[in-house]
Image 1 (spheres, each protein chain N blue to C red):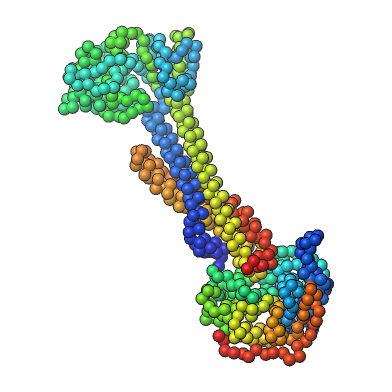
Image 2: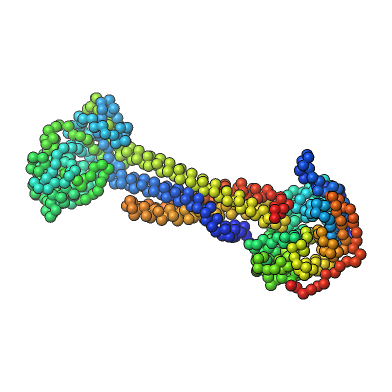
Length: 240
Length: 399
């Protein structure tokens, strides 16, 4: 079994001198390819910083991070942007669709920035929107769809380029309970069918319970790492 | 969506803000383009008028002793009030100048300070000039009826306005007029011609030079005008005249001015005025550019989240830089386009108002648009760099 994420002694500090804050203090974390993992912890535990480093939105100040075997701990901004565009999918709590772009243009965004051929971009965008069940909303704008629909479009955007790793930050945080369950169900389906490695950062134990494994953080360190014995399965409810 | 479409979309989305921002560039481009067009048109008009007046003409005027030479005296450029120095030129000088190499024709001008009446009517401001028929042809004037008076005769050629005032019913030829107390017979009438830089043939009456000398009670002609045999012979003709006059007037109380010299002074002055006005107008374009920079900085600050999302989705620094740079270029180009349109409108109106053709040249329009694009790019660099330099985390943090 290969390892998608291999973090050794990851540290992240902000500021200088007396104002220096250590958000991460030596995180050891290995995520096997194809695993669905939850990272839990109270606010200030460093879970968001960990997510940023996992998604190459930020670089660690110390330690080594191997992504699918490649050392990405000290890469350039350009290389990080290229990897983000092709190999990492992001789902945010605030959904973060661009309001001035239609659903299909939003989904195409990472592929446009990856300089993918136009035809392939269109095909992948369509396939992703169909996969999450919102192809009929392809030409709507984010303000014209519900929160649950918007998050599905955002998930389509994350999976469209065919990433190795899907990183989600409180993906159900802004949604009502029903839409939240649909999103979790969608994650589980993507994990099951595509074998996607998924890391979900959450403070909600119910959400975390849908993963195969839960890592708990506190004070910038991993304090517990457990396999979920009784994994919750979100019912495949009809789309919307 | 390509970067240009994104830029246009973003500019369009904030219509009022974009319009106000572009307004600075509109005013700047409008001012620069219309002033340059006006300046260029006036210069072209003056030059063409001058050429028709006669680029081959050489004027010999009296000057203070010792100043003898060519060029335009400083005092005259400002149109000073000091009276011209008395002339010592004679008809003999005119004849001698005719003999200089490359001189085709020459005519003396004798100003007679008197009035022309037909007993009952007169035209105020009429000047009486004694000269020869050469002057009429050198100044490209046309005799509508009759002919130039014979030398030493008491014949008179009337300018169009003089003839129309004295003889409103027409039929001036052969009729008597009084110049001072002397009676003359009208031998010809000039066609209307318009003002020729200070002298207006329409309000002038011409008599033969010897007659005028007699009337004025002098032997001195006020001014001599010569014509070179070709445009390229002006310099050598002027040199020949200078040499000749130097011998005939050792006191060097003359000055020789070629039309080219006058023209180069006038067109040089006009160019300077145009450049200075254009430069002042250019400052307003600069202010417009600063307005764009200001708004683009605000735009970048407002769109941290968008920048963060784009970066998370794999946008490179260059992608973000290009996006914001294009946006400011689009803003500036819209401003430039509207400015050019307004300048065109102003030129059309100005052309009607002042009666000379004012036209925007294609090159000035292209230059104005290119210049506004450059202004947009220069003043967009700082905001765009700021956007591009944001780290994804910084940009996403602001919610």
